Image 1 (cartoon, rainbow, N blue to C red):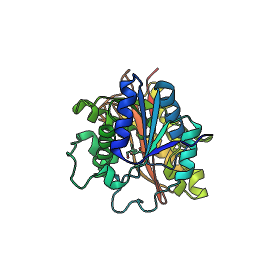
Image 2 (tube, helix red, strand yellow; image 1 turned 120 degrees about the vertical axis):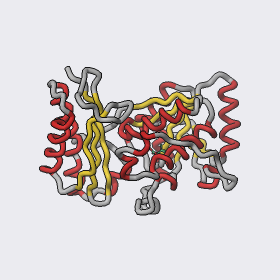
Image 3 (tube, rainbow, N blue to C red; image 1 turned 60 degrees about the vertical axis):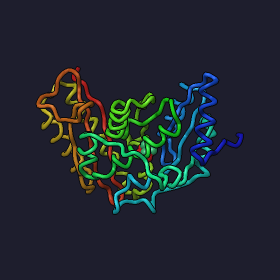
Image 4 (spheres, rainbow, N blue to C red; image 1 turned 180 degrees about the horizontal axis):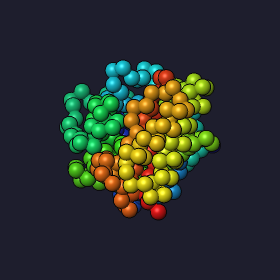
Length: 286
Ligand code: PAF
């Protein structure tokens, strides 16, 4: 296994990628906060398959953590991250310092719409403005590319898509399926905070989504019936604190009065001890 190229400065990375594009090569970007797991690996695989050169960014973005969250404790393991990137065929890892991402001279503020303030954004109002600060800056540094995001963070994917459309950013946003553990738990760096008892219980989120999706497929049209059943499944199996369960339109994140043939997205967020876990699933009536 060779040594992967690591770049830390925006200017060097940009001129390198401009040369690649001038030579007709397609650039893929996988934005991450590191501590890479199988979900990230699947994004790297997709980027490698669809482009000539794949960049993985590893940047723990301080702006998307709220003051009471885990910035200092956020898990980090650069050595393993570089191995994962190499093993999955990425070409380059971008590891900028905070000042490289957010220069003292300041950056234009990127506005986010209503999508950023419901559900995850209601619980953490500074989260998505922080995410778009990092992602827009990465897009600015990398330039024209395809960028790969996991559907696990379904609302993040929608917010990024909205930003790209609003600001006509020349980036193709590609959503990739959630990768799950054997018992259905969605892979997430935050799973590292779960105790073994919480880890056992946490798979209930996936079960609840499956139960909700099954009744939608089976013809249930009332979102309240679906959310009540999902909440019941979760409450019965865990002492974890349920934040929300919801049935939403996948584009607007509004709850429809009735579920129709176009389908819905089921969302769930639950606090297990130190770990706030989110998950989601699509459901279309048969
Ligand atoms: O999903 C993440 O890991 C982060 O929110 C992202 C997209 C890398 C922005 O910091």
